[in-house]
Structure formats: structure tokens, C-alpha cells
Image (tube, one colour):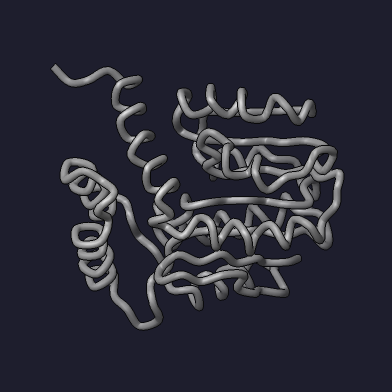
Length: 230
């Protein structure tokens, strides 16, 4: 008999929390870089978080009083239950929806948000889906708004198969903080779900959608943070 959804969620989410706590995907360096951008946007902010998970990451980037409205979407109801708890201290309008990022963006009002934020979610989509995300983000953002993207990105001229081999080799040989079962779980996820683009391709998709300024905030191996401004 297969495990129930709550058991599966707790297992996979527990593995991801170990990845974060041991800084295996460079969350510390990336958070430091993104926090500087948030400091330059004092708010109050209307923000939509695509693939928000439990919202623990975004809650560390925001200061009290900086947030006016928060909309978060994720495919896991169990993650959203945790997000409600993590966002409660902000005491603002919180809208959490269990749906994919494209559906959430298409339902978002036009010219409404100052910030669209997405962390390690966009790489799951094919390139056509990524283009739609950029286009819908531009529609949902106000003038002078910004899309903040944290994600894995292939090196320039690196094919997907080479990326998969290199990343999984790193997981297999260097992620010693995880058990062998957890490392196998991560590698299977990467093989099945990772479809990253080079940063130059994402920049072109952003410009196609009408973003005028694109700049890298941080890069650590395949893990990058970018901002795309309207």
C-alpha cells in the first residue's frame, strides 16, 4: 500500500529542510543577496509568491510593516497549512491558493503587484510555460515592479543531460548531510522534474515579455537569483 499524502509530504519536506539547514543549495548566500533588494523596496508591498511552499523563506526576507498584501500559490495543501502559520505574524491580507503558478497568475489582477517572487519553481516548466509565466508576471506587475527569480539554471552551452549528470554527481558525492535514501530521492526528483534554462535564455524570455532591466543578484554553481524590472 502506498503512503498517504501527508506522510509523503512530511518525508519530502523534511528532506528539503535538511537541504536548507545544511546550505546545500546556497540558500544563505542567495537570501543575503535578495534581502538587499527587498531593503530597497520599503513598501507597503503587494506581493505574489509563486510556488510559495510553507512561506518560511519569504517571511525571512520581509520586515514588519513592509507587506500590505500577500498572495501565495502552491500545489501542496499541506505546505499551505504551514504557510498560514508562518505568515500570521504579518497581520495583513493573506490569500493562499492550491493551484499551479500559471493558473494563479492568469487570475491575478493586472498592474496590481509591486513584486512577483518565485523560488525554485520555474525550472519545472517547459520553455513555452516559462515564457507564459514571464508574460503574465509583466501583466500583473505595476510600473517599476520587479520579478525576483531564484532558481537552478544551466551553465551557458550546457545541455540538460550534462546538467543532470553533473548535479546528480554533486548530490551523490557531496551532500553527505543526507542519508543515502534521501540522496536517491533528490536525484530522482532532479531527473524527473528539472528542466532548467541558461540565464541568457531566461533573460530573453523576460525581454520578450516586456521587462526592460535584467540583472543577476547572486550565482552559486547552478543556483542563481535574478531580478527583472518593468
